[in-house]
Length: 512
Image 1 (cartoon, one colour):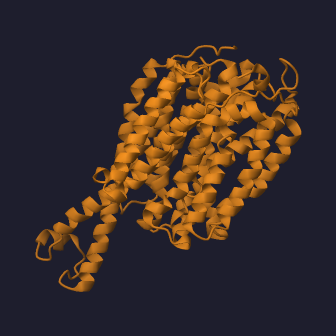
Image 2 (cartoon, one colour):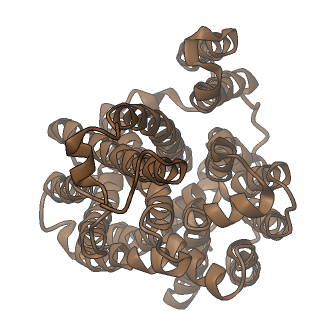
Image 3 (cartoon, helix red, strand yellow):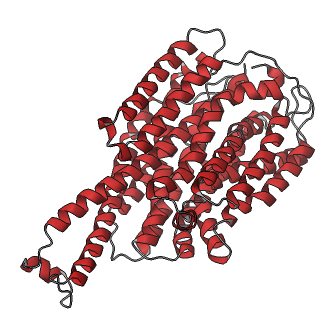
């Protein structure tokens, strides 16, 4: 990647924009980041409403979430080449327009297939926003202010997934679920006006060969992974030839991709990025963080509405404590970075996330809102402490000329974690509910004195009505046990990744 491409957002060779212009650019970049992260989760709270309106099945409705993330994942490896070919300004503005149109079309969808198709376009156009905004922000900011700039940028990256469910609940309660998509239109217009008037129009395009083979092998592997996870439950997993085909494509694609990038002249991802041990360890950690951050958020609103009978706005507002926790930690992290070892800050953040999932693994049908509020606060506090120091360590050893490319790959890894996490938790929810339900139902006999003591005295299991009510109670209890099992798995994952911190190091960024 040429230095001219990297510095095209900066007016003047080696100079930085004036403070007022830098503030405007930063505002536009944060707005783009916020929209991207909000749209990745804003549909979570209203999935039951979308499912009822569009007539989708339980497994189909999850594609409203995973299609957005998958589309972002598919586009991200090509961002470095696209930036060189078309320039940052054109690329950002074009995709802002595409994102706006796709958001409107999502809002007027009439069936699940239209929704998924438009969400793919929405995700593909939003894919560039986070890595490019991150790279531009670093380029327009003096090195001594990078930690503060990343802290400000991180507010959009971290708060979006937290604000999404709350905003979705409020909009759906007072307007319609369709407004969770319509709300993007005015925000996109504001972002377009800010960036079109502040980003430099001078662009030196580089006509470099696109690594089509590397791109195709990587994308084929990622799509095969997603299809394997999404189609596995309905195809009885490896009893189906289709699932074996997905596994073969996944393994072959990954093998060809990694062999290719280290043997070709200019692969889609520069070999020095993948050869950087510090960056790779941080990427592995952010893969797991993506699972922790999105998997729990994908199932929590459904649990609150379907099992605890919360109205949609209550389900959204109950998660506001997560936002409060993140606000506090985002204000703290800018001060903490530089004063304390980044590894210690990330360790504290992951520990707080682990505490939150440990608390969530104790949820029950009889609980109040307090456990959800408290665990959400700890989770938000932890997530806010993780991303900024982790990104600082990840890019500390990456040359400046490769920042956009590295940021794209870093975002791709997080998206893979998010998508895989949502799929795995969705699959476990279906399987565990079925298993627990069968076990509970097997022991639900009318003549068992233990069973009679646990059920209401007015409930007669010898009648059809009594049996139907008991089956409903069993189904609710089985679903809650499945949710608790999923939260416990996420607790285990958060503990497993802690040792990786000992292998990370923090050094001054290279200025190649």
